[in-house]
Image (cartoon, rainbow, N blue to C red):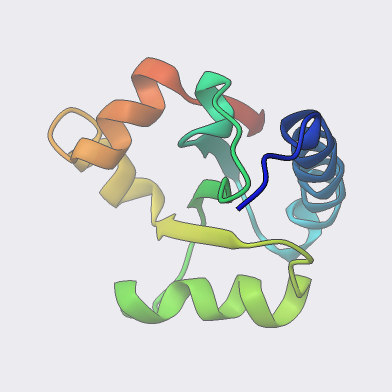
Length: 112
């Protein structure tokens, strides 16, 4: 496959634009805190880089169903993963859950 020069810059711009749209639309839907994690948070952008967001929200939904709310309401334009925790879960797991440890170490808080 031929190499495309400059694609990382274009992909980064697309990701940042989508992230800004989500940053505006998520608080009215109940997001108390949102942090960017993953490759974009640490500055690694490839053609496969996706938005990875840890969301703190009050919810009664089971963990594996919580992201459905965000996908259906926001209709992400790029590959986006939502990892949703309640405030109590976040507080309890922040030092032991590998994803939350990474958020605290390398993540970027975009809401809250």
